Image 1: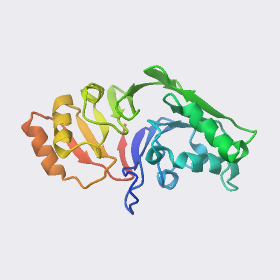
Image 2 (image 1 turned 90 degrees about the vertical axis):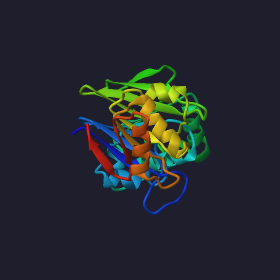
Image 3 (image 1 turned 180 degrees about the vertical axis):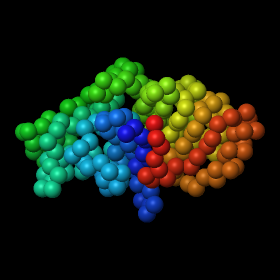
Length: 243
């Protein structure tokens, strides 16, 4: 089974219907979590993946609404009496991720987050390309907040997730001609969302990281007036797409 699930489409705002930022990528038997904001472990379970079954977490940047449940993930793995972790956990991120994880260990105690029968591996990504379980990915800088987007190809199609970002040339290049893009729609205006769609021609754009309500027909209409030929969709928690 290969699919993509929006676990959390919210932000730092605490809302009943949305958890913070996270996308679950399943490529055959490999599950990869992109960002891990608050409330995501519960959503992960609702999507059919226990915390101890997850082996790969990619962090786009270090804002709390993108990383806060990472502490709960590691703690549950080490101390859960029902589903303790028995396999290694790999955490990937930009420069500084090693300091982040080791700092958490030092502050709260390493034995709170790791047991002797598995390891927590920290991968600081310093090149634009890296692999997870032999699957190739691109990890590209999308300024100005230290954010990185994740892009990959699967069965002849290209996919991209932005995390936090803004409207700029790096984002336009990142999303150009991808088949499916999950974009941060909370930090850009409605006009910029439509303009982003028209300029990149990403064939299917899902708006996530939502600080405000968006009106899909208006976004679609404005984008089409600028020459957009694809589809804009408003994301919701647990929305799933086959890959």
